[in-house]
Each structure stands twice: as C-alpha cells, then as structure tokens.
Length: 584
Image (cartoon, rainbow, N blue to C red; front, side, top):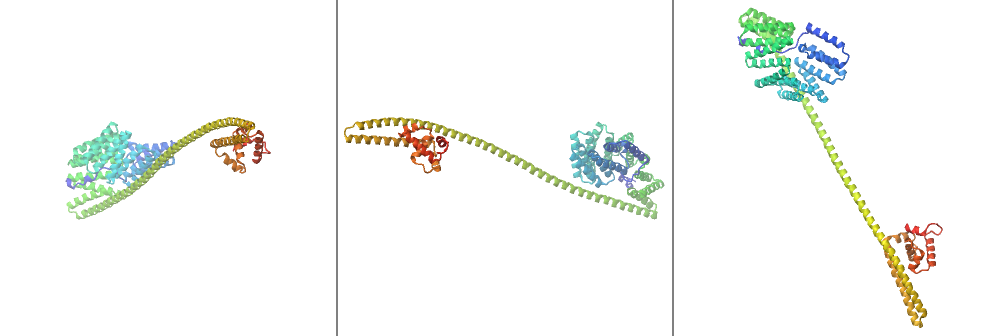
C-alpha cells in the first residue's frame, strides 16, 4: 500500500561519495595534455574554468572538480589574475555547496564578493550575491537569502544579462518553494523559463522544467509533474547528461508510483538504473534497488522485493548510505514481521534504528553546522556593517572638514579681498587727503608768496613815508615839530614791522608746521631774529628781498647770515645754508 512506501523521502540530488570513472580519468588526461601546451598562466586558469563549465563536466566527481578549481586558484594567485581568482572561488563555492560543506562554500562566496566589490566587477559581484543567497536559503535563513538574491537580480538587470537574470529568478523561485509558497515559486520558475527560452539556454530550460515538475509533484498533480520531467529529460538526452537524465527518469518513476502505476514506474526505475550504472553513481543505483523493492512489494512479489531491499541494504552498508539503509531495513523489518519471522524482523529493526540514529546524528550535525555558519556570518556581516558605518562616519567627518575648510578659506579669501579693497580705499583716501593738503599747501605757499610781495610793497610805501617824514623833520623850524615828526616816523616803522612779521610768522607756520621746533631741537641757542632769518632763507628769499622786507641794510643781513652759518656748524663747510634749511 502507498502508506507503507517511504519513497517520497527519496528526492533527487547529487550526493557525495561519487567515484571517479574511467571516462573522467580520460577527460582529466585530455585536460592535462592541453594545459602542457599553454604557456600563459592566465590562459591556463581560463582553460581549467572552461573545462569545468562544459555541460558534460557539470557532474564530475566533486573531489575532482574541487581539485581542478584549487589548481586554477593557485595559478591565478601566482599570476596576480583577479578575475581568474574570483571565478575559481565561485567555482569552489559551488563545489563545496554540492557536498553540503556550507562553511567553505560561504567562505569562498564571501571572498569572491569582497574582491568583486573592490575591483568593481559587477557581473561577478552579481554571481557572488546569487551564490550567497542560495547558501542562506539552504540554511533556512530566508531573510538573508532573499536580500542577496534580489541584490544579484538587480545587478543582472542593470547589466541586461538575461542568463544571469534567468538564474536569479530560478533561485528566488527555490526560496519560495522552500517556504511552500508554490504559487510564487511557479511564477518565478516560469519567468526564468521564458528568459531561458529567449536566450536558447538548454541548461537553464531543463533546470526550470525540473523545478516546475517538483512543485506539481508536491501539489500532487502527478500528470503535470511527469509532463515537465519529460521535457527536462528530453533536453538532458540532447546534452548527453546521463546523470541528469537518470534523475529525471527516477522522478517520473516516483510520480508513476504515486499514481499506483507500478509497472510503468518499474520501467522508469530500470531506465534510470541503467544510466546510473553507466556513470557509476552508487548512491542512485542503491536508490533504484529500494524503488524496485517498493514496486515488487506493492505487486505482492515478496521474494523479489526482499532481494532488492537486501541488495540496496548491502550497497548502503558498504558505502555508509544511511538514507538507503533506513528505508531498506524498515521494509525488510515490515516484511519479516508479517511473516512472523521475529529474528529477522528484530535484526532489521536494529539496523533501521541504527541507520535512523546515524541519519539523525548526521542531520543534527548538519543543523549545528548550519547554526554555527549562520552565527559566524551574521557576526561577520555585523562587523562589516560596523566597519562600513565607521568608514561612513570618517568619510562624513572628512567631507564636513573639507566643506568647512572650503567655507573658512572662502571667508578668509573674501575677508582678504575686502581688506585689500579697504586698504586700496584707505590708500586712495590718504592719497586724496595728501593731494588735498598738498593743494592747500601750494595755495597757501602762493598766498604766502603773494603776502610777502604785498609786505615788501607795503614796506616800500612805508619807507617812502618814513623818508618824507625825515625830510620834513630836517626842514621843520621848531623843536616841538621835529619831535612830533620823529615820534610819528618811529611809531609808523615799529607798527609796520610788528604787523608785517606777525602776519608772516602766522602764514609760515601754517605751511611749514614744526619747522621752528625741529630747528630749535637741533640748535636751541638760536635767537628769534635768527629763527626769522632761517624762515626767510627756507623760502629761498634773496638778501635783497630780506632787506626790503625787514628794512635792514644788505651788509647787516650778510653779517647775520655769516653768524647763523657759524652757529649751525656750516662755517667751514661748502654746504649751502638754504639747502640745509630746506631739508629741516
């Protein structure tokens, strides 16, 4: 009966413990021969990667694939070939993922992501995101998984890489399938399939056909599931992918069993066994033996059923395939218990329990590893976020400092410009003031000159009056009249001299401010008359002009000049007295 059949647990998947076939050895020899002819290290890396990416080599033994990818990685490191390093790390991550070594798979995926980010390789970065998302999905961490898968999808869309977009859509569909959201899973699988057909990618088409078939199988729509498995089978047959073809046929057999069509199911399992035997996949061969046992048991062919379960059990024990041992031992225990053969029933019950314990321990170990890996990378991502935040803060501080510096420089520059303008304006103002003062001094100097001329003229007039008064004095008859005329003449001269010299001194001080003070600082023993003489000489007045202005005799003035030269220390010098006074 169907309720007794645990075949639903036996799902497709490429598992560990594959043996290297003679065909694989021939392929390796062919690759090694080709590599010996390649001189450039970068070309060697590309040749190994190209070999690993060939459809017929997709199902190489994982140990072989890892060995080749490791070899390429070492060459890429030695040759300092960043793109080759990233591609080999992605390949290694895929290989370790297939053998459920999620820790190493994540390690290489993260390293490829970091290098792709540093080198700005967007396509490789998108593939790294996709791979990291797939690993998180396997760890049942769908929050991180969807985050990375959608980041990868966004980058592929930016690059208009339809192959990458199709892969990313398929991976996102797997995420929804794992969460039993079959509607969304089918939506993404179908979108991926549409793109795969558009770019004529046979590999992507058969993957999505298989994925869609699995969804319909879970929905118990077995006819639809068989239809899509057959489409995947057709493509695998064209590609010569015998392992993929065998898995497709086995999946079809499961659905035929679920429809209670054991005859057709047995045919499908026989076809898959032939293919697995050809590629020497011991795990799937043992799985086929278990499936034969189910079919024969359902058809009440107990003897044949026992033979196949024992054959599967021996294969499982020899290779430690606990997934095979458990269902085979369970069915043998059930059959012998039905026959009342308690000894054999107990023997197989013990084997079933041992296998179940081993499976439980293995699953528990995997679960612990998953939790450990999740903890490690959540911690790492947190540290990266902290580092990124610290970098962002530093960048903000640097940017703020630069902006502040520019603002300060701008203010300083503006202030300097204003200061320069202010200095120019001040200079212009000072120059204007200076020009104004000079103009006023010129005007006053002219006024002084005019005043001197006027004084000289006045002095001449007064001298004429004085001479006439002297003549009147000589011609006067009475003593009293003579005294009056003499007094008038004396008062007229003194009054004229005082007014004239007072007015001269006032105007001279206005034009030549500080002249007397400087001169007295240098020669404090100068008399008032000598100071006045110095003032006349500073104005470059001749002896005759001074005589006419002061009414002194020319000889007296010459004598006064001589005494003045002596007092100021120019008596034994050829220096000009006027020049000396003009510099005071």
